[in-house]
Length: 299
Ligand code: NAP
Image (cartoon, rainbow, N blue to C red; front, side, top):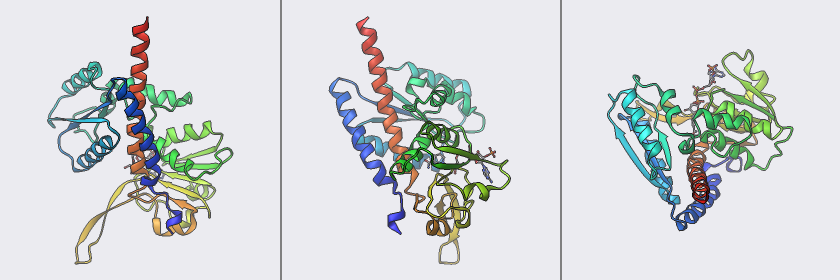
């Protein structure tokens, strides 16, 4: 069974090594990548992500600074904090932790992050560039999902790819990356009338919905590659008459791994590769800032 698993840590390892080398080169030239995180209020899920981001930054030599804001902060106050980071030369990358409290407009905040410091690849500018085939600062999860497919060595040209879920930061950019490789793409969503009819024809199936058990073994073509991006918490029996929380994807692992050639586990699949893409984007952002600065100094 383990030969079928696309393990996130193994796929992330060479990416992290390459990032660490690039950080060393930048530091030799006097530039230090500094990722500033904005955390609003207290949220256990966000706290876990922040710990993981800090750990991965330390691993590659990126400075990580988490700035905490009161949960009652206003939109204007948070926008001002983002503007201050945009113009602070010490801050080379910015990440806004989600979820944010209800009074805040997440989209406006995300858009306020300067595209050159938007290391999550979520600003309209960076997402827009993906349409033109420029992926260097693209959305991390979609980059990671495509990297997992690439790691199998499969020929992408002509591949029948089905993506379930069409969000701006996951499903749509995956489609744009792979169409650039001349794969044939089908995107499914709420409006799709007969989901299994589409999923069953996929050579590579990406699922990013947020519904545990959405994809079962009978919906998957034998020999397919299945990339499960969903993250869900479900209650399971704790063996003592009670329940405990378990993290699962959108794919019913038990039935699908029997049919698929390769499958990503949840947890331990797309998540670690997404983190490696975050630090890769952080380094790319600084390299671009450095190039612009050096060009300006020559003029
Ligand atoms: P999202 O913005 O809520 O998008 C979910 C998508 O699923 C929408 O396009 C929605 O379509 C579609 N959908 C809903 N019900 C469906 C159904 N029954 N059949 C087919 N499509 C359906 O979520 P997201 O941000 O893309 O995240 C998706 C999942 O990935 C979540 O579980 C999230 O936690 C996880 N995630 C994981 C990572 C990672 O690093 N591993 C990162 C980001 C997100 P409509 O809009 O038409 O309803």
